[in-house]
Length: 213
Image (cartoon, rainbow, N blue to C red):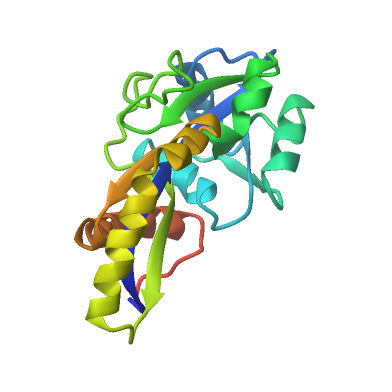
């Protein structure tokens, strides 16, 4: 609300992962166990209130589950704790699991999105795994300018950054890094943020990070 929006650049979904030798081979097995054992399943994430924490909390709210959340500073120690079996599962950006998945160290049970990820064609979506989630909480990247920038200059910025977004070299690099590009103009970006806010409120409330007014 304090900025003029320029464009949405990227949307990255969360992955729900377990160690390769975990007793759970499907998301349903994990969810059924969590349902039968409230508060027992430990879920690592990269910081309270960061994107992946409310992403998994939202799923817990939708399915009446209680997880034991374990925060780490960033994704790297979360992954290390997972393969070391210090936590039961992890919620991270799916792209953050690419190398460990390729090395056979982790098993991704589902991607928290409505479509499969191009780099992980065998990983099911939440709905395909049996737990529909039509409004997933996503990590995202976008561009904005401080309020006060003239409308003429805003038009130049919107046009110029759209040209950057369409540049083949930029798109190729994003594909290589596993970052799904999603373009929205200022109006579409605003609509996306409003939808995210609506989904975040119950998720953050459930983990005591937000108190509705």
